[in-house]
Image (cartoon, rainbow, N blue to C red; front, side, top):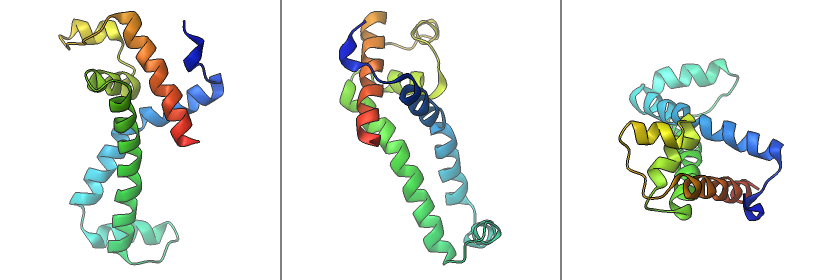
Length: 129
């Protein structure tokens, strides 16, 4: 195992759990986008915020989208030919073997894939600071 992409175990777990929220982020963006401003205003008001519901809605979508883009862009930066497989792996914990068994084409071997996964978490750690 290459030591060049090693990160602290606690940092790794924090990043992993961040990535596992990816589909929650996407779902919340979808919910906010398709809910009316009045419904979202009620949610915001119940949490103690008092602001323009449309602005709050836009700000929340922007924050969630930024998190999703961080994951996506980091995967693309690691290897744009397998970024989708990387995203599947880090956001759902589906293994390389499970993806192959499902017919997902991964343009590298198992060892190379997991090396790229380590690089993904290394870069994500740097980007998240």
